[in-house]
Length: 185
Figure 1: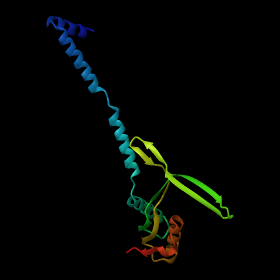
Figure 2: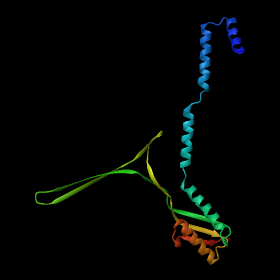
Figure 3: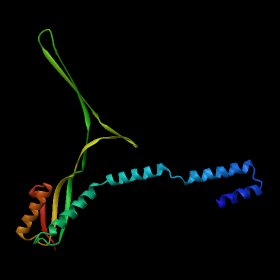
Figure 4: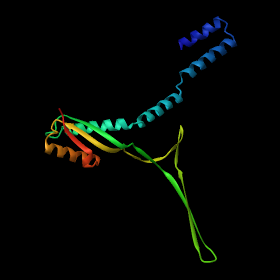
């Protein structure tokens, strides 16, 4: 309270007129506007985080699966240190939701000939986001694995080879002839 009296007293001594009071009020409002946080900046940061999380490439997927398989196989008795290479037959696929509308009509002519027509139309469903309309993804399929190469210290033992082949088959659904197990040097 003493500070405000001091300010008022200073203005009285300086014979502050209406213009000086007006300038002081404008400066105060300007400082308040500058100090207020803006919602636009935080919204943009959140949107960037979402897009970064979503953008996982096939290379990241393959590397993650290779690491996980290596770690699992190294826990099996007789396998030892391993290196794994996975190849893909196709990339991931997003299935978009579609509205299907079908119309059918049938008619019979004067000479008792029957004719029928079916019209089917499909239209993609879109989600409204702040960025605009984005197709609604109802399902995302993982990439299809083409083949697996496992290089293991115990890769020369027939039992270890069989165990590794069965594990890879069970995890990835890859045919036996597309799995190679070799000895690590």
